[in-house]
Image (cartoon, rainbow, N blue to C red; front, side, top):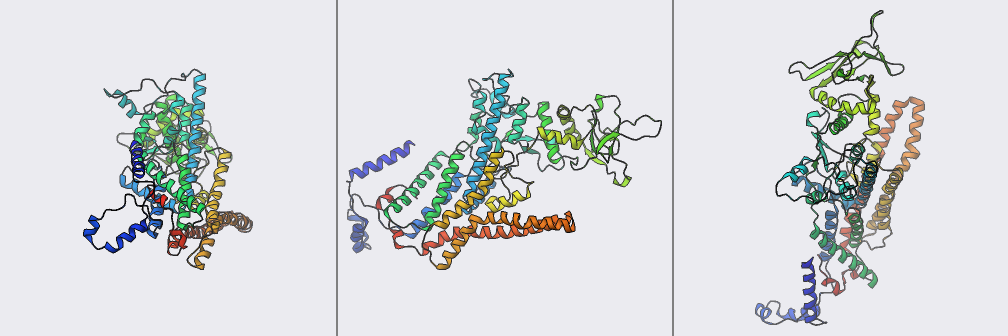
Length: 614
């Protein structure tokens, strides 16, 4: 900052010393024309003390200033989530991909930034509320530090000579907006290699805001010192200052041209939309860490935390089918001497004692233990492993009774999570796993943070994925189901409103186009961007849904669902193709319109050129 002050101070001192007025560029041009090829004269003749900038700008000047502003706006506004891959090349590729995406749809960044801002505020509000209740109950004082679950942080404090905090931060200071952003961007990572389900894609997963809230309610506070987050964040203050100078110059010169009655090129108008979007995103992401590449690893040495992580892994990728009803959770073998085996009642979908011959006592569970180097079990009807996982069938033919494959990792995971399940379901009798899972999801929901490049993907909502894809979200979309109903409603409205604003403002701009055809295509493209999503939604409600109802009455639900899916995807692919083409045309036309502009576009006030810019 001092260097900038020195630079501007030197500039104005030089300007004053050289006089309030200077020689125009036209006068200098008149002196140079006769001696342009005389190298001796060019080196001997002294020039005027101050030469004013030219009042004429070239096409290349307009092009490069707008192009630099566009790329700088988008690139510096991006605050990517913590990447799965740690390589710099992957990070640069992700940013380049996002620069291109945001160039087509700048309002996407506003939507994403607002979504994350609301999610971060929700997390901060919930954590502070839990901390206040815990302090009121005397669990810990308002100045006591929450439990730090990070081995790296503990190790750092133990290093001799390492600077330590003189006083522990309070929960209010610890759980600030920067910490909450750190959580929702995938900054907390749990490694589950020893309890990993076969269906899990990686040996780790990131904790979501809901996971942090669930653990906090159980007294486990996952904290990261603010200084540690600051160390990980690449703030890029100088970079943002330079970009801010460019933005100020772009806004100033457009305002001056409008006040002076000078025409503004279409590319400059398009660039101004990006500038406005960037300023809004800067404000929403002011507290979000930037370019964090290495997350904090959650220490799961605590029994309950490990049980929580094991339960989350099982619910997301586990070995037991949540759609089926055959898996049974018994009390652990050590909890009772003899536990009766159970069977499934097909009619009522409940468990009942397994049938046995007349006069015999109820059949007990057959406990299956690991033998030698055996890595997996195939549990049959009435069997269970010592941790309590078993299987129960109804009176079905043998060919329908498929065993459950239970590996050593599955056993380790269930041994870790059984105490946690017991605290939820109180395992004093056998339960269907599907019932246990339903109860567990009330306490452990949306615990995995499926962070994409920038936001939360909603993999389970097909319609949401399509609408978000049309909106510009590429392969993922914002998950607004975790927010309140009012916030969710706001975000849904913005999905439609932001493209309407973007397309509408471009549509209302009166500008000269090189050809009448380009003028017509511009209006069509802007109109489709503004109302394309609304048209797709109207087609869904007015045509596809009624057709689905009629087909269901005539041919049955299966045929209706297949037909609806085909119609839905066919229409959405068409709308998506036209939508992307329209957005692409708006960007391309903004650039190629430079070939035929009003002559006044090239006139510029000389003093504007004195302000540092690119």
